[in-house]
Image (cartoon, rainbow, N blue to C red; front, top):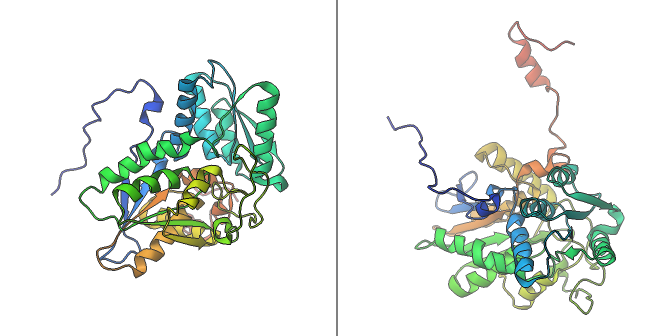
Length: 358
């Protein structure tokens, strides 16, 4: 009989929660994957605040500290759909900076509560104004009050952290092994841009697959994003339509993403319907015990489609940006009840004791 599981500890004592960001695991998934294909997910919810955006948050703040843009005690502000805001709230709490997030009302309520619990303030903007509205509100408030605007959509610190951490972790984990496909979506474009740049240089055989919502195909449209002189968006992209994949594809093409589009750093561009992403997220949870959100489910759905038709021996890695706990008030959980369903009630009543009062 095999011994029970044991752990030995990391052999490291950390001086700050921020030192635990990164080094997230790549985990094999076997459900619905052909036996002769290996599909892995990079589980970014292992980051301390639960998403890939923890990397971005620490990079922006520490870069601003190094170059003198961020002064001790200065307020940090950023427009966010949630994960960057939660990451920045964590980093700012640990480093002693006040943090304010602007975000549209369309984003899940738990994201607001997480940021406020971490000590942040959250300024809500109308759903109808989309991501551009909360972006411009952050700019207004920063300019009016002399606050540090994080500029996740434009800053070089975004893609750079993924070059230096995420990509390096992937190279190390797949050293000496095949890596035929890397699959991701995009929000700011930082993960895609940073990892794709490194893979093009060091694993050129790896096909890079980028995905975007089927009803908001900004890149596929071929229509240019209008920009201001500093590279920030001048308005909403004409191909944008509201979609359910929170954290993906704002209503503009960020400057961070644009560079990689111009450099042709992807091999395939695949649209994905949000409902397919929801079903894939449920599949991961109920068949693999892997709990990710709609964005992770969407990326996994694209990767699973590749796996089903891939040649024997193919190895695929896809990104899971965050945890499913960010989506409790979203369509991901709309068919998950709070009370017992009929089957659960019947099971309860199958033995005589401890029934709920009618």
